[in-house]
Length: 83
Image (cartoon, rainbow, N blue to C red):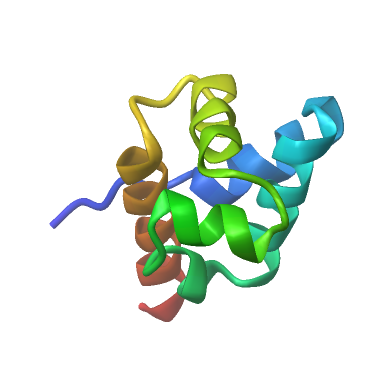
């Protein structure tokens, strides 16, 4: 079975180029990936002291379809590391 991967890599590589609110979210996800994939955009916004709109903007900055797409990629990364 193939997993979508690259979410954490994309976040790490784009970190310095992101606006401050999106950088806060990316940093939170990098530090807490297992937790982040279980959250809604609204919950992630609250935990990273931003907003759900900023979460969606981050996904668009990464050229993804949406937050679900980012979560699938991160979950794939986590699956890959546990194999």
